[in-house]
Length: 432
Image: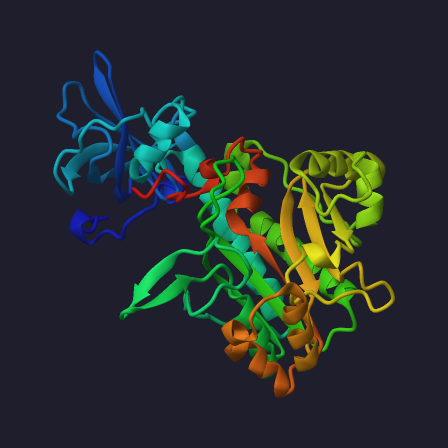
């Protein structure tokens, strides 16, 4: 049977090579992952987005340097020792670009044996490592599950401005920019907009960057990160918001199982199970369990770790929700508990001993906003365009926000959130 010209053969991905018919022509495209020179043969390993494939060449054959993009045409040949039992023989290798410079790290090694600064300085290359890339494959699968779970329950995806005229929260933790000769700020969150959009769509979510000009130089903070924001209207109280959060996180886990099983295997991680009902503590109980003073306004990282250990020991759960933070320590738009106004209808979700999510039922009456701003000494004028919306029928509502990079960092149990961030921005890093 006459074979088609190789130039017309459809590209085969490395992961699909094992299904190729032996002796059939194949065309592979990817990067030179590794070259091995033996006495009688040269082995070339090609990497594409799906995995690795083995190519057999004559001894001494010229092969482009590692990380050069190439096209390989040849014949699918059975070999039990090749990845998937199929390799490419009678091959022709064509470079698809200039010969690549030697990378800063050897990407063919099983792990990236280099320090974090080197990984970050050369992120455009180091993210090519199959294990490193698997981290963002978890993120992408989580985003798929996030969207799918919310789309299925009547949410609308929205996108809000990232240039705003005032800070979402009090304090100086905003990046000021020159907006045609007047000051503007990079948005700390889409909070104001998603609340207003509840008055249009009832249920909204957004995936987008947020910016925090906080001088934190820690393993858990970034100046820019991806926030997964959710807001839903016509809620009874914050418990309904927590139930939505539970289902959303379960959807993210389902997305990982559906789309990132190979990444999970490469990383050797344990994907959490989301219980049907999340363990729930009042802030007062949380302080007692963590051994903290009763007048603490918030949980410290040490307290969060202690609560994570408690949740695993008592409930065999990677998750625990803490509700009822002091109203004075939460954002001014957080709804106080009607029976005990000292406590708010706000909550945090801790995942493996680290705060992952903050949320709350929000104020929804104009008069309540005016009173809350006055009580905290905030000028009404600075929030006028936001507060004005509540004079025109915003329903009882609440929401939450999940930090994507923090979620992935805890999934892979990274020591530093930057290990799970494609191009991190912090106090010291503005490139690459």
